[in-house]
Length: 127
Image 1 (cartoon, rainbow, N blue to C red):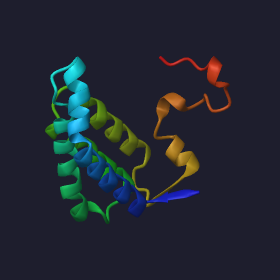
Image 2 (cartoon, one colour):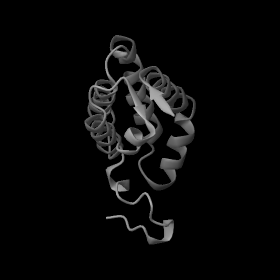
Image 3 (cartoon, rainbow, N blue to C red):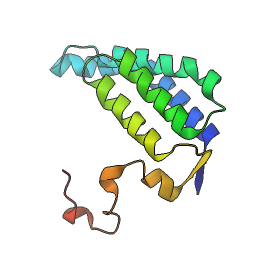
């Protein structure tokens, strides 16, 4: 199995579509426990990500993911901007200069999972 740069771009585009479609729903959930802006913030951030994708779609996966993270950091308010932004920036570090990702390389995007692959779910501890 491998994941191509085009598939990454399509995935990010689909995320933008979902955040747009589900913006009111997410905001409603946030209204119950927060300040009712999560859906609006995520929609705004991923709209900006999708807007930038055509100009960077021919770049390597690390570049695309870093650009996504930086865009989310600068355009999504609250805790979500830093959380999602940092995820994509760290994923970019593991995928620099790659045009496609193997299953193992995809796995490396999630550093807390490294070394836990063969552990049972019950024995995993998250720090």
